[in-house]
Length: 178
Image (cartoon, rainbow, N blue to C red; front, side):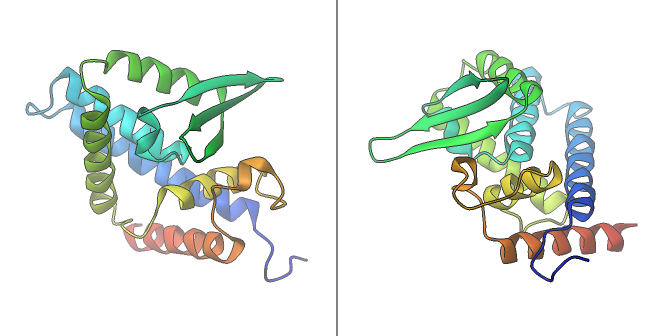
């Protein structure tokens, strides 16, 4: 039996899958738009991939992806901080590919474009209460990786209470939309 503060991996998986499905629907809706040309479509895809991975849009400024014993880690270093985010192989490859294709944008412009697309998606999907940190924690929890606070990949997530609220929020939105 789960204690009240334990994360239910099945609920986390259902919540993450709902957000993932909505993100795919959003990308498909943008692909059919005559106002959204190829670079715009790539920006929408990248914004959704970055959001679903739980990464902040600022990763486009300065990042590198490393492979460590079969695990992919996005490393972003600033003068004061070193941040590491866990990625799947597919996430890492798709993010690198889309960033390479979007090289026409300056990094500052791309960051603003991604933030705008993520905000647009959150309003479109009625999920305005979610943050990148919520999504990162939700992604880890849905994969059974949300764990001890001393885990270096947990540093940029939210606490258990916030994660539980995010799961309940997404599932409530999903039940209203059903």
